[in-house]
Length: 284
Image (cartoon, rainbow, N blue to C red):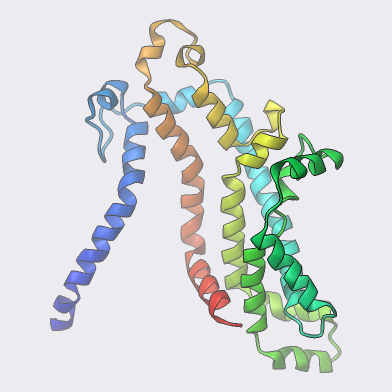
């Protein structure tokens, strides 16, 4: 009982931190579900006032946002898979001291981490590769993140060497060791890096804005930006109808549409995320 009372200030502090963290999200959610009158008068805090789906209905009215969300799902799922394959193979190779030229390859990755390419050379390269208006223009420039590669490389270097040696003695090849030993032991770091990549791809904006001009290929972030920049009277068909939906309501609904999928996925990966980041950053 005494120990619980002694921890009471800690619990109160953690609850306050949780409230401060959740307050902006709850406020945005409440605004997206409130009427324009309540938003204008400043009555909305954490609970929707005069509950209304008008903002969400307006964003989905012409079906373009559904297409954009489908594009974002494809970009995120396929892109995460490609990035994880490339990052995992590169990190595993660089974690082996017997790799010839290991120091040079590691320096090249580090150099790319310290000095990024300019936008114009990148655009010209993507154009010369005929990747404009394709999802590859989003996937290939960020196929391997130097930071994620080094975190994963540190994790691989911390795995017991004896396991690989015993498997090699039994006749296992490098590919067998990688697929049957390394990957099963690396689930925490794989989940953590996958979440990093997935969040970045889900929120992708700049590359899509630079390299994709076809409306049917735009991700949800760019499509929402375009919709929010369109005058309300155009969105609502003109007339006095524009007075019934506030820009703040539309913006709040747009934010929730982009945030909710990640919030739904994160709890299932949280334990792997924390464990993977700690192991990858400490070992090595």
